[in-house]
Length: 215
Ligand SMILES: Nc1ncnc2c1ncn2[C@@H]1O[C@H](COP(=O)(O)OP(=O)(O)OP(=O)(O)O)[C@@H](O)[C@H]1O
Image: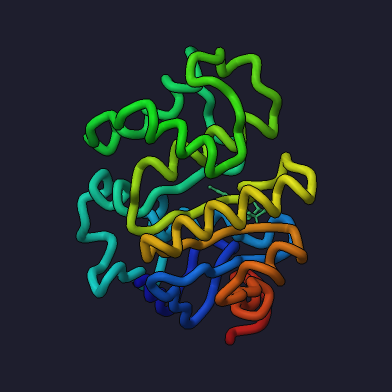
């Protein structure tokens, strides 16, 4: 689904090749500051590489309309925005961007159920805990029904048990619908349990520019 070739981005990323397969869960790990978020941003064209190409289904993302591309490839940021208003307002916020019709409340409740967030739709979102807000944002991207989900540490605010429930439930749903998931996590446990493919940034990322090595 994604093919990255001869990528250079500032002095952060430099690698020859990376393929991300359609319908698979690829888990991206690497130490803090190693460029995981930067790599996700290359995939949905929030940034453009200085050198090299990023292909999405065989097409150079530079040639794609960025707004349309980001409807197909939805990114959940590490600290996702929570909008003023209710849980429901937050769930439907992404749909306006995708120009999708607002589903019935039952479908919104189903998305909350998937992320184990047991709150009525009319709950004020501002009063939710950090972990609840994280799950609300995850439910919001799930409803966007994208082709690919780029999840940047989606369970960082959750305890281990809740993280397992939420991630496993989200991935089950995504897999049933043949979605592609690229997930960044610092959790070795989650990487070991849920990855179809493990991408270790330190294995692919080469010496940074400005260092003596020319490789
Ligand atoms: N636009 C930018 N310009 C310059 N440097 C940047 C830019 N964005 C990120 N960086 C730097 O690039 C490095 C990689 O950042 P990135 O957020 O991709 O790392 P990460 O692996 O996701 O880290 P973490 O696990 O801490 O979230 C960091 O040193 C960061 O400060």
